[in-house]
Image 1: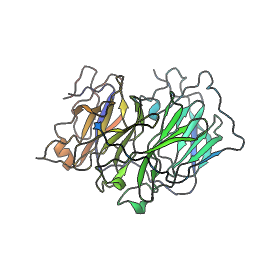
Image 2 (image 1 turned 180 degrees about the horizontal axis):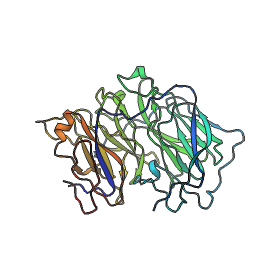
Image 3 (image 1 turned 120 degrees about the vertical axis):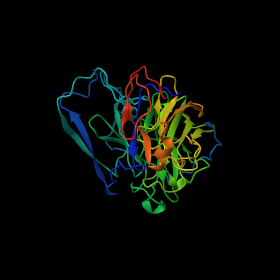
Image 4 (image 1 turned 180 degrees about the vertical axis):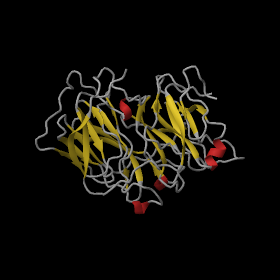
Length: 369
């Protein structure tokens, strides 16, 4: 029985990635920064074999802006936003900030490619990653402090399906204050492969990089779409599949130590195919340090053994499965397909069985069925 504090799950029709917009042109595109006329929103596994260290996809280039200076200490009253929705529990709340009156465009910054990942904020810098495998740091006036191009992204021609072209950095990065590093998960082309890279927040220098491609799946079918998370002294990278559900992908999370050393740990959904962990929030981390992930439809259908697809899984920081929840209709959902995807967090809520197409936000006393 799964009791997942704060996790809201819902069923959704269709294949992985149907909510994603088209990537648009491969040329430089503007990043629109919305300013608030008043202020911001207010709030009322088992061990895996070690992969070989990845050879750089291309010599990374770090380009500081000619007039850039260090962002300096974060001013009083300024809050970091170091992960997707601001925190490991994906709460999306900036407590204590004044109420909003209206939104306005504060700046428009031209970057080298589409941005699917959410920007993060740390130490007075806004960090933005693009599908061209480039990471930018902008100061409080949205001027470039540094730019790090990690390699060449994977074009559509290298994959059987998908709706992002090219595929570079899609999942939201995460910043860890203890190491002072920003972690990003680029995909490279020639052939498709995936990596975790650690960048110095202040300079953009690549401190280390590791492959996150492990045995047991078809590498070109895997896509890193969900946000990264930090727990248990590791960075966690979630994987699902491409738009169109092609190829031999499986839902998986891979954990790499914050300093890039040692063997990775991982959990792969025990299905023959599919069951992607692909939704934008990525893993949600609770107060005990466990990861909660929503898993899409899998290969098993009516009459087949349960394969932990169409589920919410609780995974420990050791990469081992702690608990799971699936609706009683999981097998029929897989045949439909309908799957469980996370929509957000509601502190104190717990998951429960839901009907296809409906959100499930039971009261705090409810338990997973």
